[in-house]
Image (cartoon, rainbow, N blue to C red; front, top):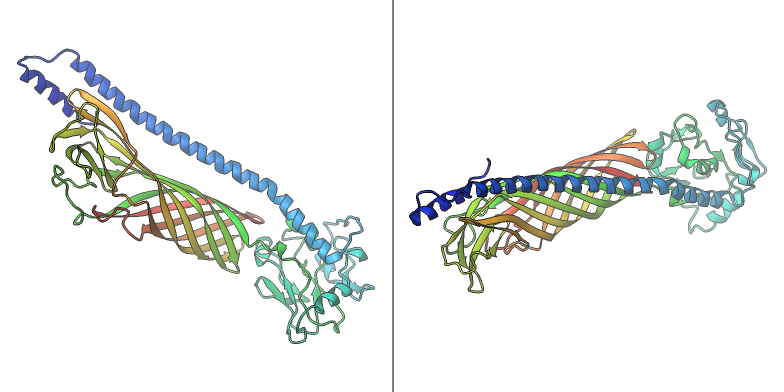
Length: 474
């Protein structure tokens, strides 16, 4: 039957005190009603949990689909902007496509009227002359540099993250390029340009057709060295992560502290408490510089504790009133059931199984170092978080003999409004398309301080969890 029925003994005792041999026949109806109420509460709580979980999953899927839908249009706007910056007004002609053309033909080139070596044989790579970067733009941009002759290399900025995700060979004129966010030439007398086709189909890059997409063309060596006109808009350093995490919350208790109250005896607030599986959801904004990654955002966390049935006692509160004191490891509350409005110090009540819920809004700040291998990446991460209390509730019932009353406590005394915690975890990420990846992050979090004030025994939370979600780069 689960829960003890101490009230039955009280009912029998009441009738014996009244000199009656047998209690009323309705006692069995009261027992059946009590058991039915407990079962209904149990199934109702389970229904609420599953309904909430389903709603959270549905919201996360909707947001993810929305971001995936608008993302291609964002990239198309960026690509059009970059292509106009590189080539000027376009002739409007479409580039011919020949998927079967051999890759070896890409290295064959000829000089155009602008003194730029341009791809010519493979029609897939051939470009109209109006789309070839002309030397006047390069010279104009180079003259804007303060000390162009001091510079030892020409720079072609481009996102290394994008290159890693599509597997491009990083070479120019058969010279390997460094695996950084920028590419450098070896000769300060030579600058390089990239065929504008790169930006026309940047969202459709793949391994096979684009191995030599960075085969560059030599420009007149008399042109001073300068940065090329490739927009930084193509860098995918900013991303949004949708996160959901189940976790197990627990507490470190220091029972030597705190002040005992009259009528409480040796009762400890953490006795009979069982921590249940909890969860958190949130949105994180991430910014990456080379291998370093910094992230912040908002997370909503909700933890659950089941408190076993116990006896509570009446004591005097700070206002001088005598009320029943309900104590937990995270705080306490004074209650006055309607059937016992004027208790005396030391009077007791029996409480049924209680559900204790804590809700926090967290603002994390994390720093990670990303290690990449093909489409996989591993990111060890550390950080801190500010946790602000949103709500604290206890749902239980008070019983005294045949009298019973359900109570929802909505305020706990002694519980701090906020606390800081530390975070450590390792993220495992798989990029299943350009700029979109799934990740899972086993982690450990622990409070840096007690969540209760000095009048109560110290309670420091810690948790083990697994964050999972989708990461979308822009």
